Length: 44
Image 1 (tube, rainbow, N blue to C red):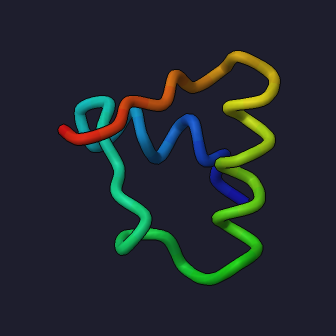
Image 2 (image 1 turned 180 degrees about the horizontal axis):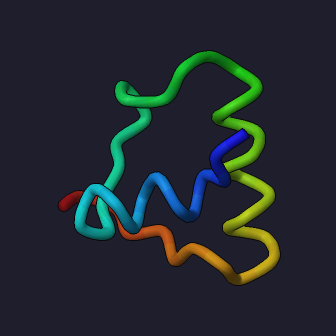
């Protein structure tokens, strides 16, 4: 299984919630943000 951080990196560092494949992937992204692996920006 590909890590969400690897997927974001492969896409040039950006992903939108509409690109996520369901709730499970959204939760993986949310946990990566909590761990500090992903920085969340708003209104890009």
